[in-house]
Image 1: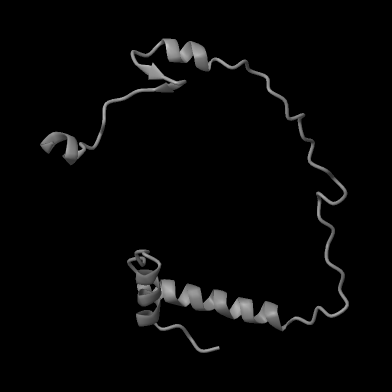
Image 2: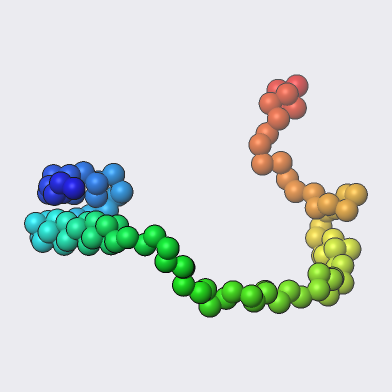
Length: 103
């Protein structure tokens, strides 16, 4: 893999909406070191190697029963407002209807 240049790093940072460090040369060197490490890891032959066990294998997530635990208080809340109709709150219009204004 080719080395990442400072101009490329600045372009990537701009596209990702990130601000590069003050020392772009050091950041570029560190990033290239990471890329080389990834190349080394990718080169390792893992044919026939079983994956490691996951710590949560054979475990289940305990779930609670899905049941209502609060009573319906909607009628109480409707009594606390000044205007209701058919079980909903009435509020002033936020957008004027031009036909009613001019008509």
